[in-house]
Length: 299
Image 1 (cartoon, rainbow, N blue to C red):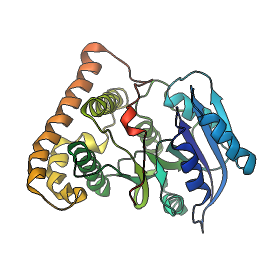
Image 2 (cartoon, rainbow, N blue to C red; image 1 turned 60 degrees about the horizontal axis):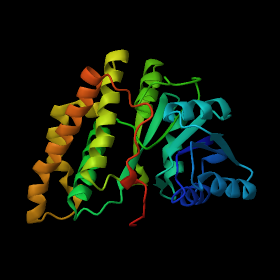
Image 3 (cartoon, helix red, strand yellow; image 1 turned 120 degrees about the vertical axis):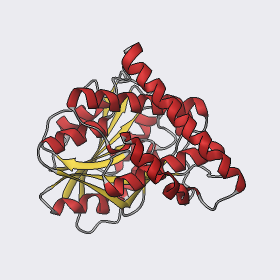
């Protein structure tokens, strides 16, 4: 199966080289990568020069530059116009895939009923810190939910059967979920397709990121009558304690981290609701959570 990979970057000079190396060095059997399209949006660092150096060495790499940052949805639409294969993969520029992630992510498309697949994000944050605990617990809950009802994020693959996503969406992966499900396709969560990311390292960045996501999910539910699986609070709380294994061995201080994590998430959801209902603030071009950009692999 042949695929096109889209990488979306805004000032990712610390990670773009590592990411491109990881994609180029994927262990592939049934899958082949025909092209890697880097969409660099409003970059004022060395992201574009680094990506272009890789492009000189491998003809599959193309670099598309948006001089002005227009939002990730705009960048994805630019990728959709350029990509030529039937299966498309999109990945955030601040992540790193495992060596077999592309293979595991794309293989499910041998089933004609599958329209979209999602990788499993694994934070590199230190679980011994409060914010590291919160981030790992959150993604652990997402993992448990996705095993039952797929929720896509960070790195996804999908069939190339639509021309664009709404340019005003703040949750691109969820918007793609809607399109594929409305066309009658199934979603597939691939827990063995691991992609490493870095969660917020401080409360300010956590609230900034999570309120934007919750805002986007509320807008999606209102405008498309579609609810992502993580909006289900009952399921979230039910799987909370099952997800504690994702934050390592239990320790006394972690007992106190749990209510703190719940409080932070509820605060972020309230702020997202406030943005949607009261402020009418759109998060299409969102504020960057800077503490998520220094990604180091603890593997």
